[in-house]
Amino acid sequence: MMNETDLHFFIDSTMNYFEEVTNEKASAGIPYIKDEEPVVLGYTGIIGISGKRKGSIYITTNEAMLKEIAHIILGLDDIQGDDIKDLVGEIANTISGNVRQAYGSDFMISVPVVVEGKAKDIKMPDNIQSFVVPLTWKDHKSFLVVCLE
Amino acid sequence: MSDKIKVLIVDDSLIIREAIHKHLKGFNIEVVGTAEDGKVALEVFKKTDPDVVTLDITMPEMDGLTVLEEMLKLKGNVKVMVVTALSDKATGLKAIKIGAKSFLPKPFTPEKLRDSFQRLIAQN
Image 1 (cartoon, rainbow over the protein chains, first blue to last red):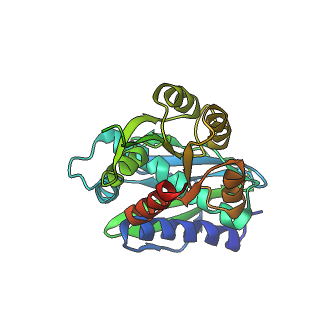
Image 2: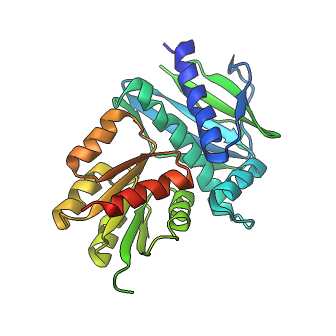
Image 3: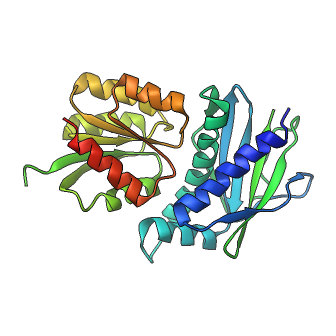
């Protein structure tokens, strides 16, 4: 069963991503348990987790934030749609890959699946609680959703 | 021209392939190929005979550690820098034990990438 410490591993990993890549800190709001209300923005990167722990995580955000981060990474003004779509998957991959420092190498992650466009919701395992962490980086809002056995 | 270091960039992320290419531009290199999964990486490796490979681990088709083993069978002296989000020590040690010459955890800054690359190409 997932606990507060588990959630902190993911939050710390997410904070580290923003600071390392953009040199600007993000902040995390108060986590809550996901209910029926959809938590999905324009671009979503999803990672399946298997091995020692099972479940999935996703980060969902908007085009403007991804464009700004892609601009920082590539130093280009003209950011293409493929880069934006790819980036949200790479962020999800990096956040979940980095938590192996806490869980060890039995914590297996999938390649990312990216959902573009505002889906009705992102389907997570029914039998496990999902925790939603609101994130703010600069003026941009996004959400990290963690669902772990 | 012929003394340029031939580099192959392997990562399933387009933006990471582009970032590595861009940030290594200051070196005397020629990027001879890029690949988005393990199988394609081996095909491009055979065709282009690179001196250096930057190699992701979590990829479709074939994971990077398996690719690393296959590349070393084909060319024992290729210098491979593993660039991965799997930043735990055990994964790093495993990559080095198989034969990677360098291990760079994601997320990386341009400076960390260039420093790692510089150290890699300076190795005998």
